[in-house]
Every structure is written in structure tokens, then in C-alpha cells.
Image (cartoon, rainbow, N blue to C red; front, top):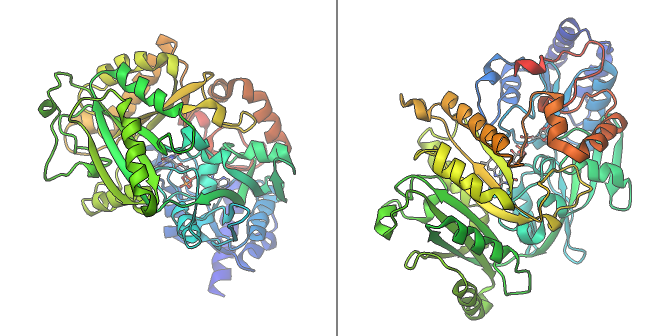
Length: 526
Ligand code: FAD
């Protein structure tokens, strides 16, 4: 009874606030079945927040309700109600966006992590079925019970399947396996029309390709059939340092050109070291904090160093041959002598490495802080210019967090998906994963770092470096059109087809909702 009263209250608020033309009974029905509708303050507040914690969020209109679905049908019902009521509806994965992408100001947030996890692990056929709101860590745990694991990863596993597939899902395996969106066989999607559609290469391929990398614009992923392989038991994890950027990138590019059997590493990443002490970043648990490695101790006069990071997967029974393969691969690299840091650990511990850093930062109150991140795909032909202008220029000697840099092969990305990459065979991810601190030092503050991001983007524009944002954030349709380039017309057509009322994922700020009475903040105010 209390729940129904709350719901009635929520519906009245929706009607008054946004002029809904939905019958209250239609919304009420959302509260029945397996799903649950909440208008409780803490739910609304949680659904308004994201990992970015950037200033505009404080002024933002919260959603008016949060739906906790249990099944795809609950999601479809929420979307159908939103469609007839003409209010925004956004899926929220784990809310690990930076710029409010999973919000639905004045609308309804579908909290996907509440759905039922689980799904078939088909060892012979090589796939696992996952609920769209399932965390990758849980998918990993389920598949490991069968000695299997997905092939392509993100560095951090507390992200949802639907959330990363709406972007791309990249990590050091992408050079070989492609991003996560290249490792999906089939999806169940609730489109903006409220229909549940199964799609794949063979069935509804337009929807399938549109949704992958589609920033939530065409439908809510409720199930993904993900490629899996036999899981290795352990990994050899190696880091080596470079002072010369072109030597570093040449070695990275050499390593991502290797694809044959055991004659390759299984993961290739890297990062930039601008700060003096190598432990001064949350990715560096590898270097012992009790024994900090100083740049100067390596005999380098350069203020910037580059760290190549590779792993080799193996089974205990093959440890000897793995040693030889690693040795052969390392012989071809030209890193600073005596700068080899190597460790050996369980595969699952390697994949889950960022979580340990998260727990450490949480214990110091350094996780829930603003994160003005900037992620860029930089074409290989201009990465040296980027190094000169950004790593050795704009950043100065203060990075405020890890800076990842690693190359990927474009032929591992399917151009039919909505994801956008530079127009070159090889491009780099540059990820500036900064945390802003309220320490009194203005250069660590959120405004300074946001401004630095703008300067980096302006530098790229002025120098004609055709970067593409990963996890993109733009304010106007013209900017989005520029981002999607040749894919823009198709993206727009797909929107008309699969979400004609523009009710889905309005937090991305790509399309103005077209429905009467939809409350939406001015795009320009962002
Ligand atoms: P949300 O942030 O909740 O949602 C993101 C977007 O997807 C929103 O527009 C939302 O509406 C939409 N969406 C969510 N669920 C669905 C669904 N089921 N169907 C359709 N649309 C949906 N990314 C990488 O590629 N590689 C990395 O290594 C990596 N590391 C990260 C590490 C950390 C610590 C963090 C915070 C993020 C990292 N990311 C990485 C970024 C991550 O992929 C994005 O934040 C992504 O949005 C996934 O987060 P989420 O599941 O919380 O989705």
C-alpha cells in the first residue's frame, strides 16, 4: 500500500513537472511483476551521480523515478510507458561514465544492475550469455567455473556488459581480439519502440551493428552472447621503461603486429610517467611503494618516461615453454637496460588488478572525487606530435593520475558498428585518467584539469591531429556530427528507425527529444 502511494505521488510529480500524457495506471503497472519502481530520494540521488562527479551534476535535474527491472520484459514495459508518456528513459549500468551519460534528467532511469545475472555458459560453442546489467567481474567468475573466460576485456571489471558494449570495451587484448564489441555473437535489445528484438550478424543485423558502440541510442541491451575461450591459469606480467618516445612506440607497434600462436604477447599496453616517482599513480601497485623507483635512478635525464606493459598467459604445465617465448619476444625490444620489472600471478588477479587499487583509494577517501577524464584515439601518424605537444608540453610535470597509451589495429574493429575510430590502420588510445583534489593546489583542482582537457583538444584541432574521443562528450549536434563523420547519417537514420521519439539515453546529449512535454535541460547549458 505504501509503495502504491509513493508511486501515485511519483506519477503526479511526473505529470505536473513534465506534462506527461501517460495514464497513471500505465506507470503504476511498472511496480508490479518482477520489477520495482522507486521514487525514494537516495535512489534518485544515486541515479543522478556518476564516477565523473563533475560540477554540473550538482545543478542537474534528477530523474523522477528509478526502475529496478528483473527481466527484459520489465525493461520493455518501462520503455513502452516512457514512449507513450513521452519522457526520457536511460539505462544505467554501473554509472561509471564521466559526463552524465547514464542520467535521465526529468525522466526514468532503468537501473540495469538490478536484473537477474546468470545465463548459459556454452563451453563447446564458445559463448556465455550475460544479462545487460551484469558486471564483467561476475561474468568472469561464472565462466571460470567452466575453465573459460571472455577474450576481450576492459582494465576494470566493475563495469556492466551493456555499458561497455555501448562504447567499445578496450584493453591490452584489443590489438589481437579487437574490442569487446568485436567479440559478441548476439544481443537481445529493447528498442525505443519498446520491442524486444534478438539481433546478430544474421538476424536484424542493422540493429545489431547500430547498438554496438551506439552510446545507448538505439536500445537497451538486456542480453549479450559473448565469445569465450579457455582461460589461462596464470600470467607473466612485465613492465619495461623507455626514455625515447619513438623507440617506445616502435616497440609497441611491433608487438601489436604479431598475431601468430605463441609468438606474441597476450596483452600490450603502456603508460606515460611524468611524475618523478613511479609509484605516484594508482596503476603502479606493481612497483612496490616501499621501494619507490625514481626516474633519476634509472640514469635518464629525461623528465618523461614511457612504460611498456605486456603479459603472457600460460598454464602451469607450460611454464618452461612460456619462459622461452617471453625471452624470444623481449630480445627484439629496445628498452632501457636494467629497467625490467616482472611478476607472476593468477590470471584472475591480473584481470581484476584495478579493483585492488580501487579498494586502496577508497580507504583513503580518494576514489569518490571528481574525475575529469579525457580518452582519445590518436592516429599513429600524429602520435609523436601529440607526445611533444601534450606529454612534454601542456601537462607540465603534474598528471593527476595515470596516462595510458597503447596502439590498436583498426582491422580488429568492425566498421559496421557505431563505434568511431581514426582513419588509419593503427591508432593509439591515450587515456588521461585524472582525479581532482581539493588540496589548495590549483593545478590539482577540477576546474584546472577540465581547462587542461580543453587545451589538449584545442591543441589537436590547431595542429590538425584528427583525434576521436573515446567515451565521447559533446554539447551540440554539430559536434556530434563531426565526431561520427561519415557514420553520422547512418547514425541519424538508425535513431529515426529504432528510437523515433528520441527517448533513450538522453544523458549523452546527442539528439533533442522530439516528444511533446519532454523535460530536457538545454544542451547548450552544459
Ligand atoms: P554507464 O556509465 O552506466 O552507462 C554508459 C552509457 O551506456 C549510458 O549512455 C547508458 O545509458 C548506456 N547503457 C548502460 N547500460 C546499457 C545497456 N544495458 N544497454 C544500452 N545502453 C546502456 N572502458 C574501457 O573501454 N576500457 C577500460 O579499461 C575502462 N576502464 C575503466 C576504469 C574505470 C575505473 C572506470 C570508471 C571506467 C572505465 N572504462 C573503461 C569506461 C567504461 O567503459 C564506461 O564508463 C562505460 O560507460 C561503462 O560503464 P557502466 O557499465 O557503468 O555504464
